[in-house]
Structure formats: structure tokens, C-alpha cells
Image 1 (cartoon, rainbow over the protein chains, first blue to last red):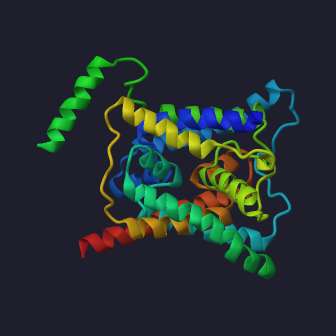
Image 2 (spheres, each protein chain N blue to C red):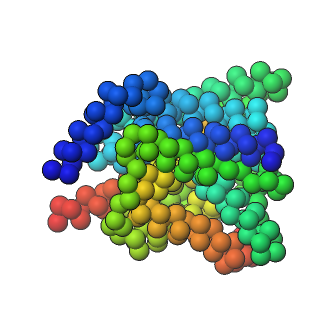
Length: 143
Length: 175
């Protein structure tokens, strides 16, 4: 087993544990705020974004990768890719709201015994197979 | 009756098990831990390439499933480079960690499926959208924090999608 696999297994376990205790959900955070102006989960989302944003330069310096990150990079942006990302992002937001939780929250709920979340996970992983067997070849030809 | 009994149980356990195991973790504490961990996994524990790949539920799940399918069925499904020799195990960890937390706090029980078919459909669509956007809700924000404009745009679009669905649900409930 590689270092990355072992680290993600242990890291995932910690996230699953803390996720179950905090009931954190990245879709629920935005939904709760929009619906009833409840910002408790939203604070967690903002905390994640800010911490990661600060941790990138700090940890990169620590391991001697101090070339510095761009503030916001466009990369070699293709407009087709950007359009797909925006439409797909929007779709992810809609279906996750209807499903009552982001993919992370669904995994946590499945871990604590929710059968409707298990049904979600079945669809989730069959969806990955369908994506690579059906949708991806079509899109690769179009874009 | 059922609810009050369960409430009583968890309170009793809260008293019986103080400390980290019974701790009520705030969303902010979770967010900070996730932020540090996602970056540390990438920078210190070589969870890359691609970049900003430390934590992603959809992509890591895809890697694990694809790796197993490729081994068992001889297919050649696409995987991230980091998962080629051995897949990332984040999703397994999350399931196990959540189960341990639920077990320790008396919250592990099998709920009857309320709506298994819609849930299945939402899961199916969520994975396809996440793979198209190159990230679940966590990785879209992580990519934005890494300075990727496309990640920020996709995350903003996701927030917009949540707004659309919330408005729709509110409108349907009020009708």
C-alpha cells in the first residue's frame, strides 16, 4: 500500500468521525442559510475555505516548495471546459439539495445506517461507471 | 416516546463518556481540520497529481471503484495519476469513521428507506455532475483555495444551483 492510500484511509476515518459528530454538510450549509438564515454550517464551510487557502502557502514553504501560488490562475482556460464546469456545478448544487446533502454527508449518513443514503451511494458509484462507459466517450467527441 | 427515550440515552452516554469520544464537534472545528488535512494530504503525504486533490469524495470514490473494476474486469477506466498503483481510500475511511462515531454515541441504527428510488437517482446524477465539474462540493472549494479560477466558478455555480433548488422547494411547499 502506498503512503497516499494509507494517509487517505486514516484521514478519511478522522473526517468521517468528526463529520458524524458535527453533522457538517457543504450543501446543507448554503441551503440552511438561504432558507432560514441559519449560518452555523456556513461558518464551517467558510472556515474550511479560509484554512485551506492559508495552509497552501504555509505548508508549501514548510516542505521547501516556496515558488508561491498565483492568487487566482486561469491556466490554459478553454471556454468549452469552463461552460461544462459551470453547468455541471449548477447541476451538482440542484441534485445535492434535492438529495438532502452533499456527497460527503451522504457517506456519513450511510455509515450511521441510513438506508436511503445507501441507495444514494449505489446510484453514486453506478453513476461513475455510467459516466466513463456512456457519457465520457460522447463528450470527448463533442468537446 | 421513542424520541424521548433516545434523547435520554444519548444524554446519559454524554455524561458517561466525556472527552474526545463523546465530544460535540462544531462545524468550524470540522472545517479547520478538513482545511489543514486536505492540504497536508496533498503537500506532505503525496496525494497528487492532480493538484488540489487532497480530499474529494467523488474523485477518490471514482478512483477506488475504477481501480477495482480495472483489476477485476480488465477494463481501462480513467483514474487520477495518484491512484494508478493503489487507489486512495478516503471514502472507505469516511464510512468507517462515521460508523465508529455513530456506534460510540448510540446513533448507529438502520433507518427504513424513506425514498430509495429518488435517492438512487440523485446519487447517480450527483456523481455525473461532480465528475464533469472535476470535484464534489469539497474539492471545488479546495480548488478555489488553491487559486484555480475554474474551481471558484464551479463552486459559485453550485451555490447558485442550491439557490435554485431551495427556491423551488420553498415555492412548492407554500403552494
